[in-house]
Image 1 (cartoon, rainbow, N blue to C red):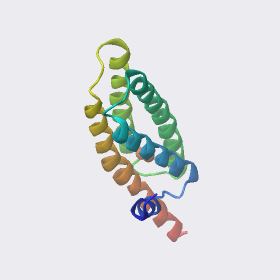
Image 2: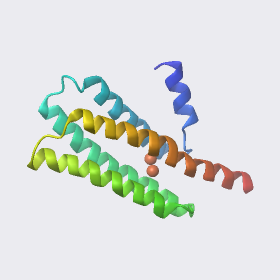
Image 3: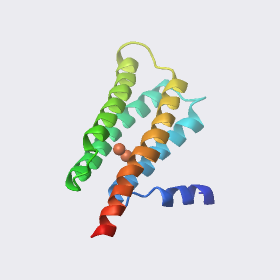
Length: 137
Ligand SMILES: [Fe+2]
Ligand SMILES: [Fe+2]
């Protein structure tokens, strides 16, 4: 792993080990898709969409249950964001299984956008809220 990646990892910890591990897994999935999207077989693509859907359901449950515990004031907005994402990914998954194969580049761009706007932004808002709570204790 490069130094830049290490710093990025350290900066974006949310101080909840399970959530940090899940975030790392997500980054890895997106990175793998970026590296392999050109030559991916349809079986690998189907598997990735299915893994992503299952992974996200689990991750959002973990995160939301934690945010409830800390009485996070923006919980509803955060949950709405999660729901929107899971809806889109589930649709890609459904499309693959029932209708036509979703464009791999479109899926990748969607995941990349989500990563930047949610995991590296919205999730950092609750992280900063948590830091403030700890400091005030
Ligand atoms: Fe997250
Ligand atoms: Fe989140």
